[in-house]
Every structure is written in C-alpha cells, then in structure tokens.
Amino acid sequence: MGPDRTQKALILTLCLVAGPAAAQQAGWHYSPLPGEGDRATLGCDRETTPDSFTCLVVRCEDDFTTGIHIHTSRPDVLGAWEMTLDRENASFLAEPSSAPYGGQFLEDADWLLERIAQGTFIYLRHADDRAGSFAYIDLTGSLHAVTSALAFCAPRVPAPNEPNGEAGV
Image 1 (cartoon, rainbow, N blue to C red):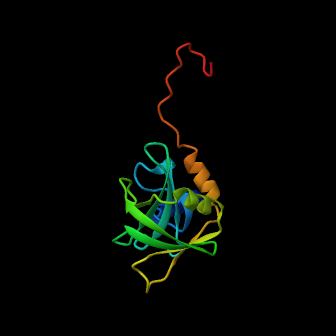
Image 2: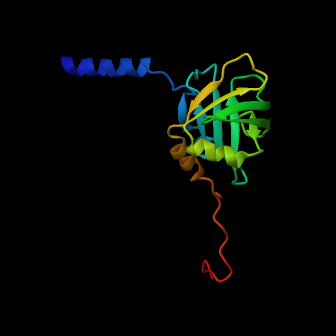
C-alpha cells in the first residue's frame, strides 16, 4: 500500500506544480495563438519570455499564399526592421495585417522566406530602436518547421469534380 500511495501523491504533486507552456518560447514551433495552430510557425529570439519577445512568423494566408509576419511584445510593430541574415544586411517594412501578429513583410517576402528556411541565424530590431540590441533568432529547425506549417497550406474544401468525373481528363 505504501509505494502505491506515494506514487499517486507524486503524480498529483507534479500535475499541480506543472503550469501551462509559455505562449512564446525560443526556437521554432507551431503558433500558439488561437486558430493559428497548424497554419503558422514561429521562430522566436533566444531571450524570449512571455512578456518580452520578438518572433518571425511564416504563415499560410487565407488565400493560400505564404506570408511572413513579425510578432513582438514591442508596442509599435509597424515600420522598418533592420536584419542581418547570415551576415547579409537587409531592411524590411512591416505593414498592417489582418493576421494576429501585428505586421507583415510584403516586399521581398520570397527572399526573406528562403533565408529563413535555408539560413543559420537572423539578428533583427526595429529601426527606431537604434540604441537597443538586436534580437537573435537561431534558424536551426526552421526548414522543418516552415515545411510542416506550409504542408497544410491548401484549400480546406475539396476541389469540385470535373464534368466527366475523371480527374485530369
């Protein structure tokens, strides 16, 4: 009776002590935001906390295109973002978006997506934060995370059958 009771007490204690996972965490993972699940992946900086974070988001948009977004605890997300992608400097403009992430990079998005999927690191900061430090996002695992998220980027409604009922004819 003793060990059984002890095991139950230990399991109960672990369940009570274990809290929910942080919404944002360092590295690449599925989006924790409601309704985003398998349609987006986030890559967050190594200093991420629930209250202070900077993340790049690769998302399957409503029209089934690929979107690149910025998700950050910074109050003003729109505007220019300076980045160093594998020792290559670039600047991207975050524009308003209907997605829950704050801003979307529309210009040169394909180039940025290729760097996210194939690169090794990104340093980024908002252009207005010149005195602040750059956020570091490790791109290890980004290719797998992006590929997994975009695998679901297809119409959720089956395509209508062709008139003769045979596909490809």
